[in-house]
Length: 485
Length: 96
Image 1 (spheres, one colour):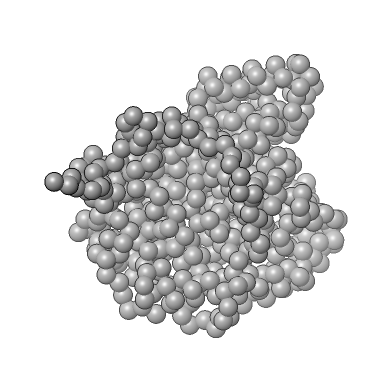
Image 2 (tube, chains in turn cyan, brown):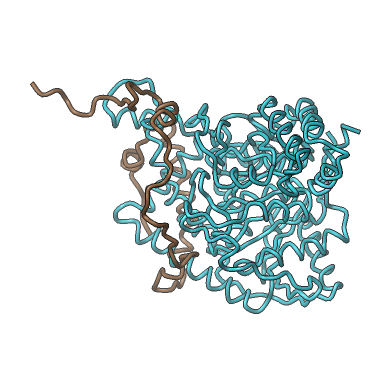
């Protein structure tokens, strides 16, 4: 009985907790037992304070017993990507630069989860400073795809997706700058949502590229994803871009069977693996059979998305990561010298290869003589891409594409070719550039490897994305799927 | 677009110290990536960057004092501290 708890959804666990047939302690003990058996195989977690988890669980059970339960997440564990601050827990961004920093404060989302009664359950592996698409850039450990341990889980939120697919936790948080929630969700067969820019506060999220970064929910079903999204969304004055859901109002879902779905021209062609294209085409035909209006959408500047993103994101990263100078926190080199020598040595010892590569690239595109040719042109391209997406979404409710062109690749297969790795994000990047909500929904397998489709909607149309996902999920067997481990 | 870059100058701007091998590797990889950026040079783009912003208004909070981390919490995570202050290598030489 206890061993089966890891297979249940957060919603079902919440129902059992509310009915009194399960305690948070029993649930956490079962998940800790699974962690002890499985985590070394998968490598999803970098840290789990078991005593703290059980203390949180006991506190939750006591609240519930006293009639002071805080809602549907009361007593439910939520694991957190290691770039989101939780007071008293490590905050390393999977980097030697920050290990072994312990956060002195809670992020806004951690505050929200505590207020909802959730158990803040462990730290999840990621590409260093969220830079990567395979979680191979972690300086702390390797993470493997639970469906095939020789393959990558995707990234940068690879730990968040792998933990779900391995049954290590029912809910997790990721962050998404160019696809870092949706791409690993697709590779691991789970649901991942990047909300509208501004819906969820980034206070306490370690900054990578601030005009693109968003925190978002990850789960094994649409219902669970929505449960977590609702808990996280609220206005926060500490993030000046965050308006939360109350001021603007989310667009109502409406009838999912009446959705107008746009298929961007050419997106299912070159570079998309045949099995991925087949699974996504089958999803399109499913929606057509349900009564949805399917049409072709024009996004003529789509080819500019990857270069635009890698100029904007690296420029912002080179600025944001300037704070790691060995002075106030993080690694300080033992090499003696002037302050500049100390800073240079600290950064050179603390950052890994991909972070250095992106800092150098970002420094170049912002440097005197080159900023107009690269950074300013990228901003102009971003404006064009955003305008094209908004125009396309004026005629349809959602745009449907694959999430990733190919299934998960083998560990090390693309490690020496950063450009090939950057092209993993070709379908997910535009939503970040345009500030739009987007979701990856499991839709099939390529052999034994999960495949997902990707929906993008107009700002604040999260409910429509979830409704579309729910319609598909209800008719297929991909919700709650877990790898056999 | 740009013909090339000076990896030593870039490393200096970025406050990174690179080995000879790293300079060769990063130069090669950056050249490859910048080649991919050529699409931006060839594109017909709008003249303004105004529409590149995904949030059009800044929600500034009121300019009032709020809770902050205390000195003890700040110095606890600092690489080196002394007497409640973060210590750093000497910035200014002694005057004699």
